[in-house]
Image (cartoon, rainbow, N blue to C red; front, side, top):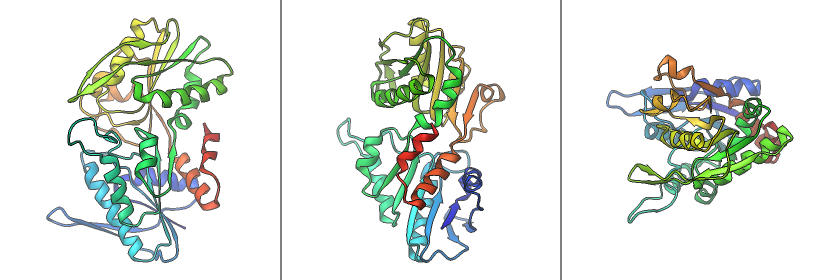
Length: 323
């Protein structure tokens, strides 16, 4: 077995390697003056099961597109040099939002991403909480391991729930299944009933509308769960709706904190008691006051466990035992 983490995700990769009790394998990345690049393994991979970690979020150093191309080219090189099996470990998988056509001539970006990954010879993909697990599994023809946000966030949610009533809230209809699964896991952990609610939301041309609350949050701790936080607009609307509905506290939870421009307003919004996200995406660009509002949940152990399951021929559904 060989384990690589490309430079843009090396810190996360080192945490995965530490959880596996082994070092990362050596590789080289070289930049050319015109913006092109190359990456190569510095160890032989022929006949090996190879794992390559790269998160596909954009940041000040590189766009998500650039990181995707580097991942594709590196995996292609591994295939050329005889790797027996290549598994891409992608903590944040880009292009999950556009998994179906909603307007004339729309793309289906999730499917195109899958075709690119498969074209360079990747045999399997592991990722944490995509926008739609159904779309992920339908887009890829290779095996995919989807680590649910519930597994990452349930332990923290349990500690924050308090003794009073708890309601898990989906900030839009598209996240209902995610919220239901999270509520079921949390209910088992708390040993008491957990309510459910969702908020009507529509997005068109980048504009949000709709704020009808379906469910009762009065007097409860409202746990609003989503796959990611970008500008935070969706969660701010959800928090305001929960407060109007009488929620005692509102806690935001998401697998990925992208924190695009505008997110500081959401992080500093007093409607939120706590903002909890996975550590898949670093956010050094945020102000100190905004960072102080974030609680990060470590995700490396989940990816290490996924590797162990794949290496041992175990069902990756056993990941839920960590939740």
